[in-house]
Length: 433
Ligand SMILES: C[S@@+](CC[C@H](N)C(=O)[O-])C[C@H]1O[C@@H](n2cnc3c(N)ncnc32)[C@H](O)[C@@H]1O
Image (cartoon, rainbow, N blue to C red; front, side, top):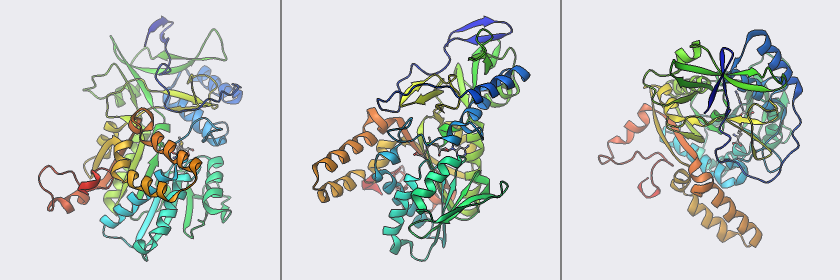
């Protein structure tokens, strides 16, 4: 990242990870019309109080209650800005459904099972998992199963409700209500929507977060000769309708708080909201039992500048047209592990390819191919399989990470030979489970 000096702030010339390969695909290019309301709001704020943190910028751009990208849009799928694994093939959600049931069984089949999904998008993953739950009804027996969705976007919660309940739902009026929507799924289970994880009722829970943590706001820091400096977002004095990155002239509270003393990198991104969320999940798992499965693109504390934007399946300058493009940063799983603390055990990250293969995607494919006689559908199945597992596509870019109660691995330790991986589905080779 090249830095030139300007006023008391240093202006960053290469603003984001635009040179990196895109992780999302398609060919459609949309006309770029700016979300003027949000840009004006941000410029007003910056002019009044000075440059803002990247975290504040990202939060406003994605979840501003009026003009935020997630607040207003259904951006998923071929006509949107990006596509995710649950949207590519139902096999993905089915295998995650099997993982949920397997962890519930490993916990001794508790009488209550909360399936909690963070950031459910269009509700496709939840829908595929519910189908598995229906197929495994005899295994789930009398367990009281319910679905809990944590979703900040009114628009997407509507899409989820249509997909999951087929209109068997109602919106709750009062803004302060913890549950803002509730209903019954088309498979007959109660489902509720919340804005925050803190509002989800306690009880044995399986938490799922697919492409959720990467959407949480990050702070960015740059090592300089004078020490760590925070990257901030400012209005460009030469074109007031443009934003630019600058470096804080001195230490900020965030740089003093969030950069680790032993940090070796030149540039770091820290996601405190991700840290708080994982602590919340860890506390719940330690107190009430359960497990969390997190899938996202990410790294184990080694990457530097990963902040990027997507629009119309193309990489997009993060500072251009705020509110009109998805903003994202790779998840630092090393940081999540540290923040989860000692009361839980973390597994992974492992690649999506390994996880899906360990979950039996190859066998599932064989069954589907055998029962399918339509050539187009077969080709579609093979294409989706390749997309999900090919190391050059989603297979290696996406990682799986799990948070488990400490007792979960201790239970089975007696049966294990020294050095044998723990028998947690997806994280252990299929033959060894
Ligand atoms: C990239 S999409 C992923 C959607 C879905 N999980 C999938 O993989 O198809 C991110 C999801 O998280 C939601 N989201 C983003 N920030 C959130 C927040 N702070 N609290 C709750 N939901 C949030 C978005 O509205 C959206 O549903």
